[in-house]
Length: 395
Image 1 (spheres, rainbow, N blue to C red):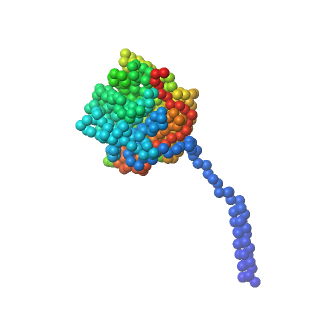
Image 2: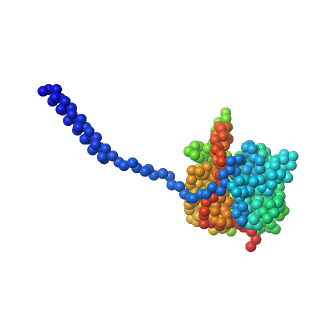
Image 3: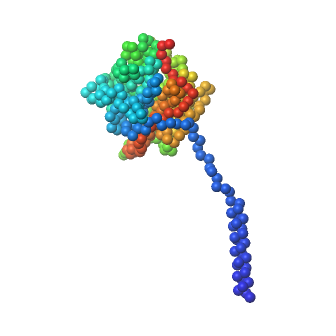
């Protein structure tokens, strides 16, 4: 009788274990749907760009879209294009876009920014610098294109004592209410020389270099942003990593044109300056510097934009996002999307869309030990907002 009893006891124990397992299984939690990061903004693809890497974007009153492609080392057949049916086409023409080292003042060298003014002209900001080399003599310039004729209407060259050999002309904003034809404000974001804000009289072509090497135009010492989960450092093969060192970059005017907002690429602070003092040749550098205001913290940004309602827009390259500063100040997120890989420039259009480029700048070889991590195509996106573009001009 011993063996059957042992078998019976083993059988009972197995049944108990099975029952316990069943009871435990019945108490297991359901398959949870875990929370994820919140997205924002219903972005729309305007153009996928399989060729050169874009930076600037501009939208005319009639809705024409223009993009700039600086010559940073990649093949760039044209440095300014109009997007037609989703395809970039050389603008204002292929010949003008053809880099001519013998005639850099008469052709486009490397256009960083494109901006529409209150007269619906397209302005091209030519750095005059090929692949970040020193500025070529006579090549740094502002070029106005009449969109009614698609012809160059005006060229203003920035002299060597203002656009220094080390300069990198980055962004530009216009106020056509002052002087005979208005003024332009330009950031010099050089990472090899002093940073500044340049003021250009559009009638005479004379220019001033303001806030030269001022604390507010410099990069923040030791600044390290984090993009796509990695510290962004300047990393060349065989060299020690260096902090990002790009100064004054993004620009935006207040709705009344009284203050000019600006920020360094390597910073999370926003500054503004009295625009009247900035453009007044009789105002001393000390007086201009005394009018600088620290506007507080913001996301690390590349491009800025403003609207007629008095709000300032920011690309937020660490966050794959676009933010807006309202009164208070308060910040609201307009766009947060994984596809927004380094949002660069912004342009607010009359139809209420905010346009922006996404160019993967953080994946350039200069930040990745010489390895190019960019994946084409680059993109121009837009998102619907409730702002109207700020165009400061004669009433």
